[in-house]
Length: 289
Length: 292
Image (cartoon, rainbow over all chains, first blue to last red; front, top):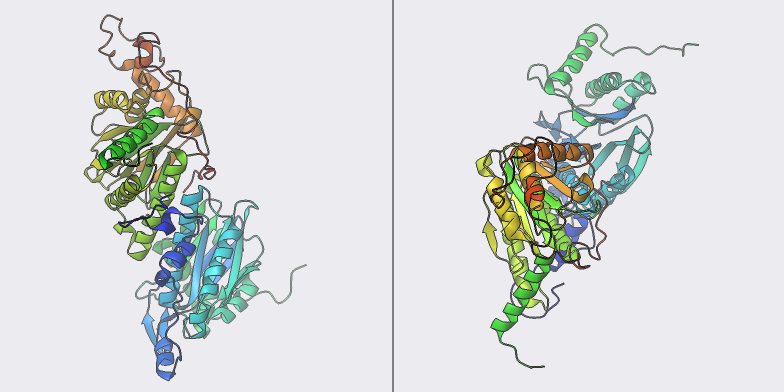
């Protein structure tokens, strides 16, 4: 390797002497300023605290495993204080061929994390010639969230929800996080964000083990609707502007984001039924024998 | 042992050393076809790659010393990923990458005791054929723009001559494949025996794909293309060196160059494969997944 002395342009040592296939590690050693989680200055006082509270926050993400895969869906609203900052935020993304990630928390930081995570996974795959295992991906995301802890403590909170199709075991898996990292593997279904309490209650009654993909999608849309019904920071389907939840499935065929038309179909079905039963389909009171 | 060597002499010696190292190995070809760019190299290993993905629309191909070009491959991927992350994915270009490699290789050539014995090609597929780019970067950091096709490494002149003859703009993948295979099987470039799928490394940059356009061609699809290239090969005219031979036979045999050439011994000697080139200390990674 060019260890010779002498002036003149040298190739960046961190590139040519790389021992790591982690993109985030490269940034940390080469350009730490590009990493998310650059905490704002010390002594967060009242004014900077308010500035952070006024950053757009993004809010309910649901995930549910299903037959041969997993569904991930998110609402479209971002709020800044009491105002709606954006009506059509996308919070659910493809992280790679067999996984997807959604985030709740500060919008801009969330987007940055998703971007970094996507590049992290792709970078590893190109360098090593193979994809990370699903657990490897979940762990990398935890490490990135941990790196954001300082900023999170000053209000720039991002918490992701990560799902993937595990080719080795042949079913979908869900991983959740807290502000200090994780991951925590979740069974069956999970939700994060300000509306997650309502979404989880809804899914508790609607979810069935091994439900087919279409049913799992519908259950998620119902759950998002219920979250929007009770949480002002979660947006329901916007029928006039035709803005509907972002819905993605990850199955043995890989990641697929439902088209706007498909998403609209599910949302319209839910809305029409709610015209007669506003609280949604009632669950049976007793388990059938 | 002299204490002083003139810089000119030192550079000449380094250049000669590098050229010899590169010529000892096998050639690699890169060429445009109507659907994108095809890259092909003889490679019996399924784990150690000469042709790799760098970015969405950019591929990398190399000849020479494996561990040296593996380093360059990884550095290139890192450069591309950082540029794409800092700015946007569309801001990563083959031209930028070629310049990056040129700087690196130039510095290494000048400042290192031993230059890198490598020659690399960086190819980018455009939305349209006129947006395709192929750059060749040599061991001393020279960059050349190679429109249409390029052969490099090994007996590059001979491979290039055949490629030039068989290349035309806008070929189908099958015809481009056949042209590349014929060029690589040209006399003087390794064995002229029947090439099987296990001895070739082939990849394409597929213009029509979204996001990542790089695809390896393997197994069944590779066998298919080899089969098709044989039938294309038997239909083309005989090589000009053998004007007296009969018309090409109907049965699909090996590429015409192998069939019509004079027996072995008249071409340049084909030495044993030295241990340094095209193998090397690196382990590389496993074979990349088929589906991206």
